[in-house]
Amino acid sequence: MKSYGSIQALKGITFTIPKRVITGFIGPNGAGKTTTLKILMGMLKPDYGEVEVLGYNPWSEGHILRRIVGYLPENPIFPKGIKCYRLIEFYAQIKKVHNVKAEITRLAKLTGFTEYLDRRVDSLSRGYIQRLALILALIGEPKLVLLDEPTSHLDPITRTRILNIIKRIYRDEGIDFIISTHILHELERLCNYIIIIDKGHILEQGEARELASKRNMVIKYIAEAPKNIDLFRVKKEIASLDYVTGIEIDENIIKVSIKGTRCQDFEVKLHELNLKLKEVQVPDLIKLYSKVIGGSIEG
Image 1: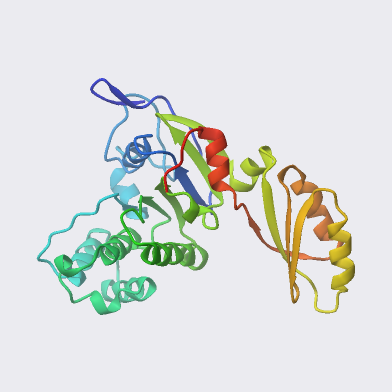
Image 2: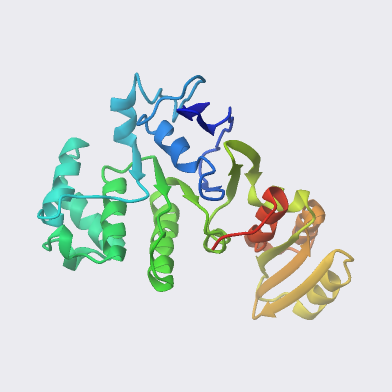
C-alpha cells in the first residue's frame, strides 16, 4: 500500500515476475504504475508491505540493487550543458564499470547513438533523449531494466525504433525488462508476460498467451516445416481442426490462428506433424486489456 496524503496510489498489490521475460506493466494513467516502479527501485517506501527485487530489499540493500537494475524514468531530466559522453561516463563510474570506454562504445552502437556522444544534452531531440536515458539504464550490464513510459511523447517511427532496440537487447543481451505503459498496441509482439493494474489494484497477471487463452481469444502460432515435407497435406490436416480460424503458408513457414482455449491441443498437433514452433503471437492485447479493465482505451 502507498498513499499520498488522502490519495491511495496503491491498495495492496501482490505480484511475482518470472525470469527471462519482457513484462508489460499496463494500465491507464494514474493506475499506480510509476509509484510501483519507484518502490521497486527504492525511490519510494510503501506504507506497509514487503518488496524484493532479484533477492534484494530496495532500501536496506539499495546500493547493491541499483548496480544490477537499470531504470528509465517517465520524464528523464539531465544537466543541459553537459556532453552526452561525459554524462554516460559519470554513470558508468558510479556503477563501477571496469572498462568505461568500451562499455560506452558498445551501448552507443547498440542504440544508434555513436554520432551523438560528443553533443550536448540540450541539443538532442526527444527521441535521442530517450536513447540516452536507455543507455544510462543499460550501463553496467544490469540483470533487469525498468522502463516507465519509454515511448511516451515520441513520434511513431521513433517509438518503433526504441522498441526494436529493447527487443534486440532482450534477445541478444539476456536482460529482462518491465515496461510500464498505457500505449498497448506497441507491446503486442514485445511482451511475453502481462500485469494489468488499475486504481491501485492488480487485476490480472500472467503470460500473455495464458491470459488470452483464458478468455478464448485468437492466438497465432508460427511454425517452421522441414524442407521435404508435404505442405499441402499439412495445410489440409491443420485446416480440418475445428478450432483453427486461419492458416497461411509462406514457403516453409506456417502461420496458424486458433481459438485460445485449444493451445495445448494444437501444440500436440505441431509435434505430431513434425513442425518446429518459432513464435506464439497474442495480437489481441488491446481486446484483452479492454475485457479485464473495461471502459475506453488510450493509445
